[in-house]
Length: 294
Image 1 (cartoon, rainbow, N blue to C red):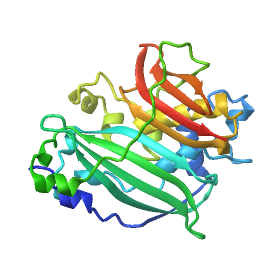
Image 2 (image 1 turned 120 degrees about the vertical axis):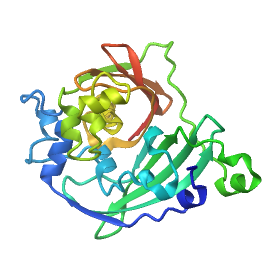
Image 3 (image 1 turned 60 degrees about the vertical axis):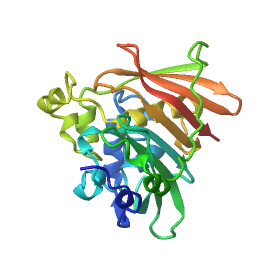
Image 4 (image 1 turned 60 degrees about the horizontal axis):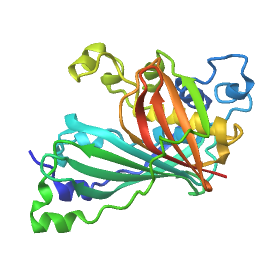
């Protein structure tokens, strides 16, 4: 079955409302490794109810529409779909507890060509449920590796439309980074993170991971994304999570729970470029990273 472009492009997401508590915020912080050093008071702010803070990237697990592309109506081969990029803009601080509303839509379906897959871009706006003020705008780019080639007809091409640009430049890996932050991930990080978000057994069951071609369960991309945010907040925001205004990455390789995430940071004018590596293997796991702080 081929991708049904019209159905995907016009997918109707229900408006989602969610009330979250200190427990949810603490659980998210624990998955990112906050609290590994109980004596670190700066980190304790994200995992202890007294003066609790939420890292802004926690928005990615709130009012989540689920794995909707696996619905047979989409025609997408969900077994070959991978999370390609994540971009978040933070409009105002995410409270440590609260009630939110999430509204999602598909903004583009792009044919990369026969044998090259398709790109599905979704946008989700998270807002305060009481006053409707937006808190974060989240853009996810999903590469559907088994679904390219549908745009070879003129009708299909017209239905798809142009790809919105994402012009985050790659960091100059030949230049020495201005800052380097090493943060170890917990061996049980994926098991904790799946309680906040994606329960896919790929992140928990060794047999499922082996069947997918991995030696052991891999860490969720959105968990490693959160650890990268933690590094940027620590290095570039003086520890203030409210100073992070944007974070975007392209996922380039899996990170395994227990590995050290090394974030290499370059200051480029008023902006920040970064990349993240699995330090023990010297493998880039997130590329084309960009951040805005202020």
